[in-house]
Length: 304
Image 1 (cartoon, rainbow, N blue to C red):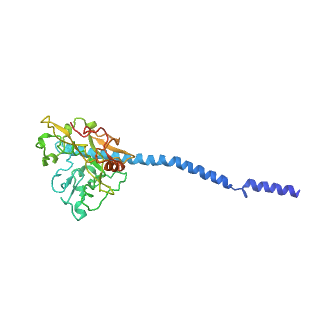
Image 2 (image 1 turned 30 degrees about the horizontal axis):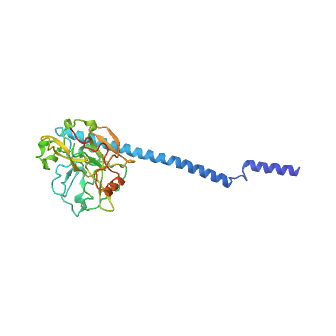
Image 3 (image 1 turned 90 degrees about the vertical axis):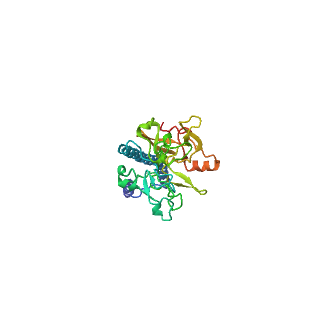
């Protein structure tokens, strides 16, 4: 009777878990399952975060479009000039995103910085007129060296300076073969953009500087692939030349760049090409995700 009672008590202890425990193999299996689940979920979470940041970036770009349209409504239908005094001194003092104190590169970094509150779009941007920064963080160089602070304060965005923010496509504004100051004083009129749904206004931007190691700086222009001038074979008409521009579109959103077009819609574009002739430097541009989307021409930047 005593033996039967002892066995019964042992079974009760086992069922109640007093002595029960996971074996090492069971523990390892659980850890392995958790690791597999994490490996499956993390890429999805990373992609979701990237999509959220890209959505915020598109919202920032649409706000810039709205601010520019508001500016045009208040300024005789002219879009804001990308750089009204570009040919003065060290690239001038005024940009679409702000105004700086110094016309030349100054040893005092504060004089090199653009004050967003004094910028032409300030009244339409909120937050003391500041351009909202692209949420996809980019470690732009920000010291007082000559070109590192050239465009600080852009939010990481560039403006179609040639086709929207200047008169480079308007032959009346500059004599043949010259870079006239008048070219940059005002932007295009909203009614002069003949294909607003296919003409770039703002996009993710940066330029590559240095000879090694290379580094990125903010840049306020979304450069078209080629310069434009009077067509020598068809006087009185503007045409793109064979002179290439420095690439400035930055494909920072999982190898895509966000862009807002002149009709106000925003989307993402994939890297298509860079026209840098030096193969080594071209590889550096691609490594830093700098180039152009669309066809190898100015068609997406040309207001006509």
